Image (tube, rainbow, N blue to C red):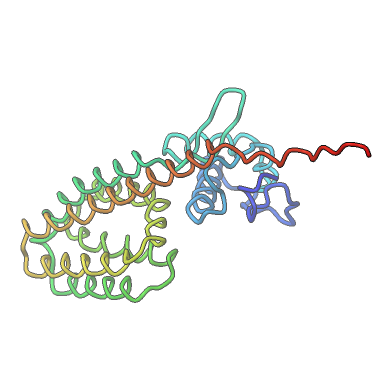
Amino acid sequence: MNDATDGFPLDAPVRAPLLPAAAPRESTSRVIAEALREAIIDGTLAPGAPLRQDALARHFSVSAIPVREALRLLETEGWAKVAMHKGATVAPLSADEAREIYEIRSALESLAIGLAIPKHTAATLRECAALCRAAEREPDPSLYVARNAEFHMSLYAPAARPQLEDLIRVLHRRGERYLRLKFGLPSYKGESDNEHSELLDAVQRRDVPGAQALVVAHLLGTGDLLHRFLTERAQAEAALANRPKPRGRPPRITTGS
């Protein structure tokens, strides 16, 4: 098994089917796709890890057809890469993709918050404040990602734009792998929590331009930070790979007496 798949035992025997025996094929493929997304997000399946159809079919106790459909779905969403005659692998992390995700989010979420603010009520604002506090108090990175998304979506919910919300949720999922990287960067969480508090304050004051400016700065700043981090990491890895290997000491030559 490739080291990148440790913790996701695709080759291990499964005691019982993981999916309902009577599940329709379409729902089966979506359940498989969701399970693989989760494994990619939490790092169980690392970038470049192989996604072998036969191993996945054994793991989920299904035929190859729903697995193929799940991989096709993941490819269209950017989670997997499929190469002719080479099969599917987990898509690599990309500095450009990270920045673009947050650029698009900034545009969509600026629109959403502008539509939502006039429709917020005292009850919806209390919910936003509670979710903001929950994210601030959450030390677990995996749970914080969910709290972060819940807080953002609560700000936009009163807009009642389901298609806009769906697009934003898709981008949140696409960005989860990248957001987790920020937890390794110093002072990230404190800065993010402060920006959330400022954003919530603007929403509570019904300051549409101020809230839009804050959400754009918050998201573009995250995208730029991730782009810089991934670019520098790739450069460091390339430099390490190209570093000449030290030569061994030449053999000692002795002469006979």
